[in-house]
Amino acid sequence: MYELNICHLYPDILNLYGDRGNIIALEKRCSWRGIDVTISNISIGDIFDAEQHDIIFIGGGQDYEQEILQNDLLIEKGSEVKNAINSEKVFLTICGGFQLLGNYYTTWDKKEIELLGALNIWTIGSKERMIGNFVFECDFLMDENCDGKIVGFENHSGKTYLGDGVKPLGKIIKGFGNNGEDKTEGAIYKNVYCSYSHGSLLPKNPTLADHLISIALRQKYKDFVALQSLNDGFESKAHNSMIKRII
Image (tube, rainbow, N blue to C red; front, side):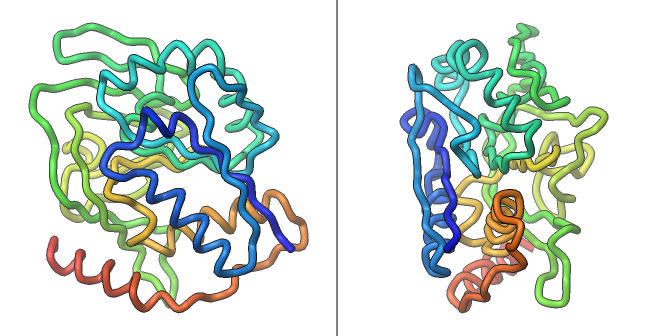
């Protein structure tokens, strides 16, 4: 029997717009297949040992919440987060959690804030917010059963840009995405998947949830081939109805 250990980093601080739903979706989609799941909630002052976890999730938060945990992330947990990324652990990071992995954040009044520097990305603050439901397309999810479209909700004033070595998670069809300029949304680096999508991302996008679970199992078990199919009728209706409404 397979088993996955999921780490929820800063669940008491970064949980904007129900981002914890991503943890619930991962857990349920594993348990429905008979895959055991252990969830560890790790926050400020707790020890983070990258080797103990297969999937690491970081949710979103406003600037205030990010400032609260900045020292803990950079000084106490930074090296282990980087070790986890370099050893190709699976990450899902949302909005503020996405930004925190980058090189720096420049506020709208030109104050530069040093971030973790685990991904070659940077964020520039602006006075105008990018808000609303949005749709983007992930080419790595496209096959005969999936058109690769992902639906979500964004609410951010920071404009994120991707540097060398980092690919976008997807291409914007409707909405703003990373910066409202280059039609990119989110980022992928090694097995780190980042998005501005709240609300939550994975429950209404089961193909992406299964993609992350599959990568984690493939990393951990040499005999893993593919996930058992589930009846996603309800999830698919929610997914498709939102896409029709937005597009």
